[in-house]
Image (cartoon, rainbow, N blue to C red; front, side, top):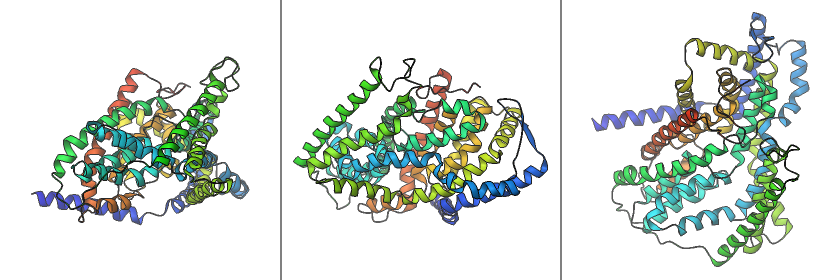
Length: 507
């Protein structure tokens, strides 16, 4: 019976892997989707379909993008569509600062220093917490923490794969939780704002990239506890006693790394205080004219603030540790970061065309109104709607790994639907982030999946895709269930998801 279950599970994973591998590259996928929007706009336009605009109650029809005017728009707007793709500028800007902090060695040293300083009885929670926090440095956590978690557990006489699993769960399944804003907030937030503008441009102008901040901060505590419980009560007992030959010894930070961390911390605090004064002083230049903070220049300046808050400590750390010896090193490290963003820039070109065509054709608004009317008629709203949306995104994530690519495809459709049903764009984004993060660790199409397997094979030569997913599956299910319950509780309490970011949408 056990063999049959294992056989079915393995076959199921094989289907996911084969299907996902047959999908086009995200760049190609967006190009195909853009062409499909053009064809669909011509077909639906000739059908004469119209809906009532939810804002001004005017009739909205689909614009034909394959007639003379539409073709002129396609060629005349192509460059603007690329440059105007919402996440492009904010992601590249934030990564300039984050990239310097990563390449100077600050991020790696900070993560290692934190984990190695945690008391033994808190080590599991510390590893999960460090993994969750690593998302501020984009994907750096995938390379640093899983092997470090394995080494620490092995040195303590515990099963190294349990340490690796705890770190992987924090880094990947907890990717959308953090105590700080990161490039992920900027990237997804800009897509959400653009999708919200389809229904209500005035509302979209009041939104900010910190729209999920309160929720993701609270999520850090909850997910750390969940990851701790799953590791020590489910995963580690299931793995049993480690009988392999690899026994590790912990090595602490070098003196120069410690010195670099101290000065980086001091510089970071001074920088943060400087920004705080610009906001908190009665006549601070980043306060609104009426003295407010939620709708203020401060909220509009979060991207450059994130850039500077990472850039200065990263620069100081690099100078102290000699990783940066001149301005040329700074320029080279920032250049290397931008070079690593090459694929994202290419993706932005085709994704920008798809999003622009979708908006110009009015397909997003029409689909949003029709979809909302259908769901409302079926009485499919409230908690069932949110749970179903989270489930659908989770299934899609098994086949399309990129969080940005998925949200760029889904946001123009689902954000208007949610708004029509009375849920804010901020709520739609948070539900998306929960599902996208929780299922990362069980999809073989995650770009870092092969790297995690390579780390794990040091301790278990038979480790493969199916085995790793079976180890990570309890984390995925636990994170998904607890995180969803937390969001539902947030809904009933009516707490804002972030600064000026309500649960419900009111026109």
